Every structure is written in C-alpha cells, then in structure tokens.
Image (cartoon, rainbow, N blue to C red):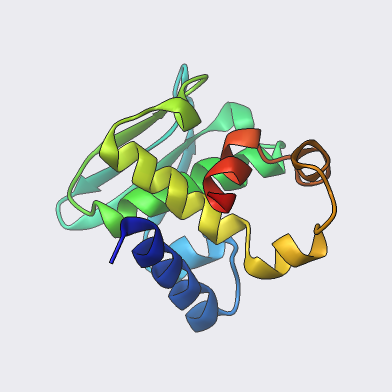
Length: 146
C-alpha cells in the first residue's frame, strides 16, 4: 500500500472517529499538548518529551485561522506518523521541504483539511479560486489532488 493511501485512511479514521477534521480538536482528543508561544521564524514544531506529545505553534500566526490550521494539521501529522521524531515547521519552506517525514506530514495535513466533500463542494473552481476561498496554500491542494 502506498503512503498516500495509508495517510488517507488514517485521516479518514480520525475524521470518522471524532466527527471533525479540525486539527485542534483531534489533537486535544488524542491527548496531545498544544502550546502557543514565540518561535522566531518557525511556524510550529512537534516534540516528543517523556512519552508525551507536544505541538508548539508560533503565537504570530494566531488570528490567521487558515495558516493556524495548516501548521497544526502538519504537526499533528508528525505526532501520529512520526511519534518519536522531533520536527520543526519552518516559515517560507514548509510545504516545499522534500524530506520524507516533512512530505508525509504535508500529505497528512492535505487529506485532513481538504476532505472529499470539500473537493466536491469546490468542483468547477480553479485551484487559485479554491485557495482564495479557503486560505490554504496552493501546495496543499496540489498534494491533495495528486
């Protein structure tokens, strides 16, 4: 089974189990700690500390709901796919990173945030229009529709 199919199944499982695709709600229900704090240039990062999962989000993105969801979904991807890895989500390079675990976290975020229902709702829209309406970056929709 390829990784995209595995990630799609995993995100579908969480959406079905918790009745939401909201990464904040899912993280909380999974017992993952979320901390909003100054992080400099990093938008967020995931850290595994003493058998506890932590997601740190840069306080500067609070108020930008779309970016907050994308960063949180990406870090949630690390928490469920790469439990013991410590990962940093860097500004300006986030969705362009080519490392295997970063790509997998991005794919996780794309499947979690862009559901099949959402794709149907925006059928007939261009990718640019989709991004304008949702606030999600182009790279996210590109990962989702591949």
